[in-house]
Image 1 (cartoon, rainbow, N blue to C red):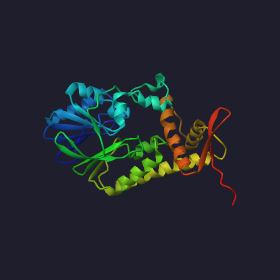
Image 2 (cartoon, rainbow, N blue to C red):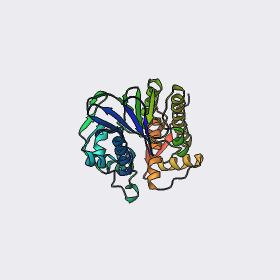
Image 3 (spheres, rainbow, N blue to C red):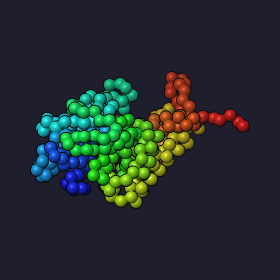
Image 4 (cartoon, rainbow, N blue to C red):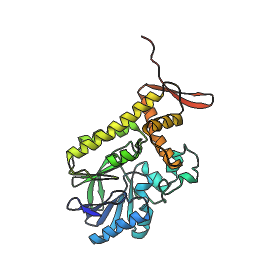
Length: 302
């Protein structure tokens, strides 16, 4: 479970990839996973290394990445670092299901631990660039798109990239990879493609330790997002609501949503596609008969 990546950088797997960085004052974690059980595994790994856990870096404020923060902060007194904007969700986790539910109080179906983590303090707000944490120099790299303020962290040629990159297993499981801004997600993938590191640690799945495997994963993620956007556009020969677009795209892909949480997580990238297409001038939106519909923008006959 505990894998050493460099002289002072480790990764702890199991559901999600969590980092440990050894410094002069102790260990810095990168994310804590979904819940207390993930945090306990992280603390056990720290104990195996014989060092106190003194700080936690957050890649982004999704419950499966910070669900163990509160337990770990209570248990160890560690300092919590979070990217600007993402910090608000750590302090007020209901903002995650609240935003997915369209800005209204979410029902019980959206209050499971996958969408609603326990609240935790934020001691430091992370800005892009060089970052000194507990005596360790780390580079904070903006990787927005999957969330508005997602941040990657580089140290010792190891690059923790959060959910900026989805492995093939995730793309096989979910036709619509989660994102809130499709254009920014594509730009973050371009950044990863042009970056240089010995090891890339995604939020989930296998690590990437060579340029070929990284390039293949980046290309597959990019291709899926572009395919999704194309399918959304193809649906809009007649005006449809976003929910109708979602149903049509997933029916074509042969995917069946299990519950309300799955629905809102699949709808977000559909909405991100619609925004991307609207930015490009390819679709238009209007309210008709009390329904908000989208349609392909017709160009004047030339």
